[in-house]
Amino acid sequence: MRALTWHGKHDVRMETVPDPQIVNPRDAIIKVTSTAICGSDLHLYDSYIPTLQRGDILGHEFMGEVVETGPGSTLEKGQRVVVPFVIACGQCFFCEHQQYSACDNSNPAEKADMSEVLYGYPMTGAFGYSHLTGGYAGGQAEFVRVPYSDVGPIVIPYGLEDDKVLFLSDILPTGWMAAENCEIEPGDTVAVWGCGPVGQFAIQSALIMGAHRVIAIDHHSHRLALAKSMGAEIINYHDVKVREALTEMTGGIGPDAVIDAVGMESHGFTIDNILDAVKTTVKLGTDRTHVLREVIMACRKGGRVSIPGVYGGMADKFPIGALMEKGLSVKTGQTHVQKYLPQLLEMIGEGKIDTTYIISHRLPLEDAPKGYKMFKEQQNEVTKVVLKPD
Image (cartoon, rainbow, N blue to C red; front, side):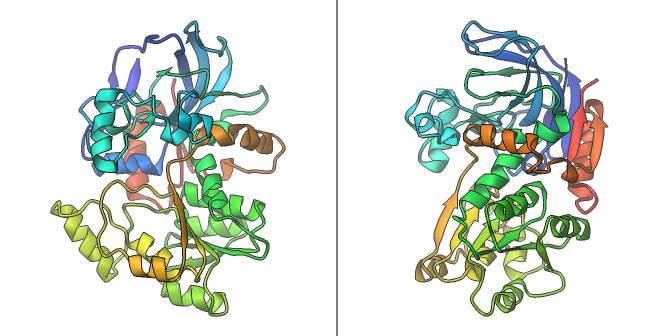
C-alpha cells in the first residue's frame, strides 16, 4: 500500500509499505477514504516530538471502510467508521471512568517505559504519533490496522459524507472538550488563543454551551475572519497588547475562562518568545510557552484555564505565582474522544455543528508532502488539508 512516512525534520515521503494485517482478535483493518493533516502533525514535521523513527507512518485523523475484522471485533465489513486518534482498551480503570486518553493497556510495555520516564506514568496509545504513544502506524495511508476496534471506531450512517464527520477523529471533540473544561456559566466571556482548527471548534463549542461572549486571538486574517463568522469577537495580536485589550473589553475584570489552543510552538516577537525560540534551537528547552503564560496572566481572578494545545516537555519562566495567587483552575489533557463521539455525531446529523467550513484544501494522498509544506508555510491561507486516497 501507499503511505506517508517520516524521515526527518521537514522530510516526509510517500512510499510503498507492507499492507497491515490482523494481529489481535479485536483488530480491524480499515480502508481509508479520508484523512487529514492536523496541527499536531506539524510538531512531528518540525521534529519537536522525540522517538520518531525513519519510515514511521504518520496521521491520526482518518476514517474509512471496514474491510477485515478479527473474531473479537464488533465491526462488520462494509461499515463506514471514524476512528479516534486515541487507542483505548475499554476495560482498564481509566477507560471505565471514560478517561480514554489515559488508557493503561494500549501502549505496549516497551514503548510505555519511555513516556513513564518523561511524565511519571505511561501515555496511552495513539495512531501515527511517535513511539512514546506506542509506535502505531498512522492513517495517512491506504489501509490501517485498528486495535481495540470494538471500543474506538464509531459507525457512520449513510447520508453523512466524509467531510462532515472526519473531524470526529480528533479536532472536533478536542475543541468540545476544551470548551467543556471551561465549565461555562451563563454570562461568561471566554477567550480563545489560536484560530486554527481546534480553536475554531472550541469557539463554536463554547457558544453552543452558552458562553455570552467568545473572544478569539490570532494574527492570521483569514483565520480571524472564520472565527468572526462563527460569532466570535476578534483580536489581532499584531495590532494590540492582548492582555490590555482583554482587560478593556471585559470592564477591567478579565475573561472568565481562557483556552490555549496553540501549544508548544507559539510564535511572535515578545521577549519571552524570542528566548524560548533560542533555547529550543540550541536544545536548552523543549516548548515555546508564550501563549500559556499569556492565558494565565490574562484570565480573571478565580477563572478557569483550559489547555487543549499540545505540550511535550519542560517550560521555564512559568507564572506559577499568578496561577496560585489568582486562584485559577486548570484543566488539560489529550482528548477522551470516545466519550464524546455519540453526542457530537448526533449534533452533526441535526445540523447543530458545522465542520466543513474549516477545510481549505483537498488533495490526493500522494500529495501529502506538498500538503504538509503548505500547512507549515501558509497558515493564513491553509486552515485544514484533507487527503483522499485514490
